[in-house]
Length: 347
Ligand code: ATP
Image 1 (tube, rainbow, N blue to C red):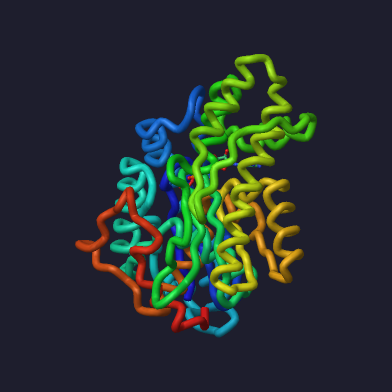
Image 2 (cartoon, rainbow, N blue to C red; image 1 turned 90 degrees about the horizontal axis):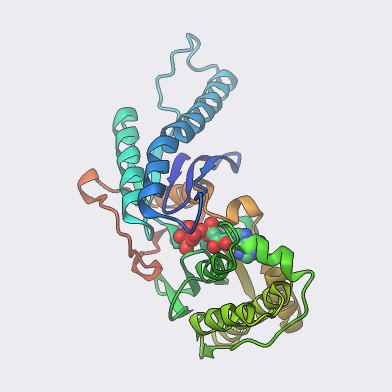
């Protein structure tokens, strides 16, 4: 199928077209950048309001071009009046995310599906973060580490669902880093700035908090802020922060691989763009004979490509929803989703 995906859970107003025949993904995104501080829900929603129509229009024109090319090569539609809609369905992020943003995206998705007379597919954003890794790696049955802004989960499939093996007990990993960078006066998003500063820093000790396969960031963040306030060079604190947080994520990922007996690890989420995190996970996987995969950065940070790709799998498995059932869910957990598409891996 050819699916138009729309994403807008927090900062990225994004639309994409995934065409399963060619396995190609077109993504158009417009990022909300706060003037100061972190992501403000009302301002983020205003951004969605202005940016979603433009990114959707760009994706739709791309879909129309694909349809015109397909018509030309099959000799259909010689008059150039496309009888078929350029897409088979509209997929959108139903949650988790910021309610005011989700509602705008859902409204746009319903309107577009209604106008083109195609079905709607409601996608869980966290499951999309992991499925794009499985899709781009062609992995059978990986353990998935979702390291994103507002979340941090270890997931693995069993009996029809992605089970949460471990997760953060407080904030998401990216949000934790962003809180630290706000404290030191750096603009949002903080992750890339911590990565750059850490390259010039010397490791400092910070609290390391892992409980089984769960983990926590709040104590580390308080200690990191206090260290900077006490005069430790910020580069050193950044180096300590990266080493500590990423070692925790690597430890829990290894425990999950060991306890499930799986030998594939896939990384998802915006923090997955960090080279140091990827290097640590890769090394751990190599040491135990497992295969590691991190998708390219455009699929790691929030993007509609992952929504369109999972939307195509769900559509092929018959997972469409009626408008009346398409309410958003800001707290939508990955283990609430029936993973019916794993019985149908043809897309
Ligand atoms: P979620 O997907 O949980 O809703 P989100 O919407 O905030 O989260 P993502 O795009 O997955 O978005 O991740 C954004 C986060 O990634 C931000 O917190 C940002 O600081 C962090 N980040 C981006 N690049 C890097 C990097 N190089 N190193 C560490 N963190 C990074």
